[in-house]
Length: 265
Ligand code: ARG
Image (tube, protein in one colour):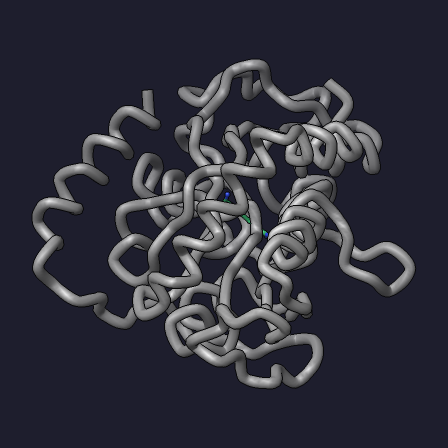
């Protein structure tokens, strides 16, 4: 249901904003990993560098394994870079910083299990969607919260600036939501009773519940959404190339292969 609303708003915003340029938004948080060699905003040329930004605390889409960022998004980006004949590098940063990093050209593209939303579309372009995300609710096994309606009057944890954070603030009021830098921190807060529930994307939710005892995911879905790659509004050439690459990766089965490597259905 939420998806329909999001899509409808999205369509209206597109019409309303068609003539306007992107306004700058988001906050400029700090990059936590390497010092970014500023990505050229015209990263498209064969043999060039393609800088992907992400927040590598979101398994199975992006996470660390032996000091390396791996996951569905990292592999999709690698496959895209290969198709474009470019060399991929990955920058890890706060989720909050990603949209600005795309806008300022610090990164060429963002793959972070990022949901397409009308607000983000004001600031960046999105590629074709490559996956569906579902916002779910994690609670402790003994919780009396059984559906989204029960969240009313409870304290909810979410990763800062994610759709879970935004939707919950809209639906239950900002005071009912505590934002954490990572989903894992929100889950930790749930375990220690600082919050009563965590709203987060379904695949990371599964990973966190698997890694922590005493937690469960509610059956009711809170929102369904599309993941896509964010690219600067100034770089239509890259957007087109990325869209073509995604299409090919869908058609030749590479995308499915990558997903099934990390998610067993
Ligand atoms: N899909 C949600 C959003 O776009 C959460 C994404 C969080 N991603 C991450 N790599 N931490 O807001």
